[in-house]
Amino acid sequence: MAHNKPVQEIRLGRIKAAIWENSTPNGPRHNVTFVRIYKDGDHWKSSDSFGRDDLPLLIKVADLAHSWIYESAQEAQGQDKAA
Image 1 (cartoon, one colour):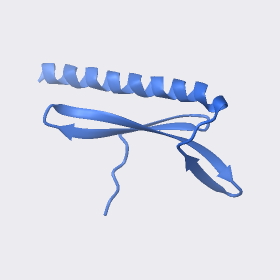
Image 2 (cartoon, helix red, strand yellow):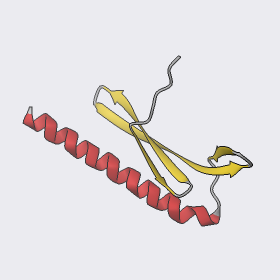
Image 3 (cartoon, helix red, strand yellow):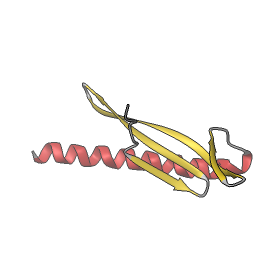
């Protein structure tokens, strides 16, 4: 079974957002998941837990994800009007 891929990923340092698109009768809707990536020995791992020092980057990544979703919606509305 194939896994869905996010429509966009945003990463700053070790904080990453994945933006997911869901089709609805009212048009596309987006959800965002956040992870903190870290290296454990030779292996990269991820966690959905964030420490105090992660929060400023989490806020910035969330803001960038919000901007991407907003701009994507504006572009889609512009394309609908042009059609």
